[in-house]
Structure formats: C-alpha cells, structure tokens
Length: 144
Image (cartoon, rainbow, N blue to C red):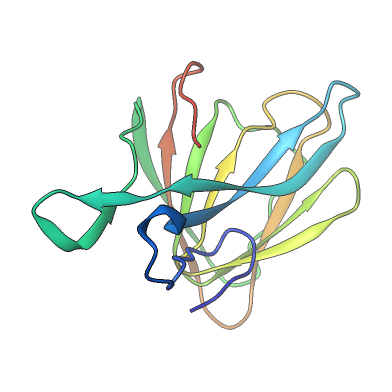
C-alpha cells in the first residue's frame, strides 16, 4: 500500500469512521500560482456488504484515455476543464508553478483543477508507458 499524495490509500484501522481515500490535488490560488496538495474522500460502509466501503457519488461529464510513451512530456498548460486523473499504468510526474514536483504512480488519483493561472507540466518517468483515464467534472462537482 502506498501513502504518497495521490496514491489510493485506505486506512486499515477497524474503526469505520476513519475509512478514507487520499487524492492528489493540482490547483491554482488567486495569485495565479499552481500548487500540489491532497484531499481526503470519505468512505462509508456499504449496507449489506460488510467488507465494502463507498464514497459519495460525484457527477461526471466525460471520460477519455491518454497513452503517453516513455519520455513523453507536456509544456506548461492549464487543463480545459476540471477532471479526475486516474493513473492506470506507469508513473506520471507533475511540476507546478511554485516549483513543487510530485510523482503519481499507477493507482494514483488526482483532482486536476488549475484551469486558470500559470498551470502545470508533466512527463512520463521510468521504463513504462503511462496510461491515464481522465474523467471530466462539471464546475459544480465537489470532491471531498
């Protein structure tokens, strides 16, 4: 189990109230700088299935997939809309305008919402191509 930002982490304690999943967050502040942070998504017991825990359901508007070959990179940019990025295969590294960098390995989930400001850039790292599933979110969708 990985506990890095953006990696899916489920608290293994037996207390149901502490079940959560960590999600990376790429966001912009009013000064235009982009940053990397994290948020937690609560997981509640699934009625009738004692070994299952579910988050609240979130509205989504689209889904797309991106395959990036080893060494592939993006220039500085802003996403066209807010999305949840799921790293399915490989490792994707992000740099934000405040100079912070973070690697998101396979299994990572990130809320990418720096649609304004200086944006971010990223690249495939390691020896494996990267496969990403990007789920578009309506502006009103709150992930928490």
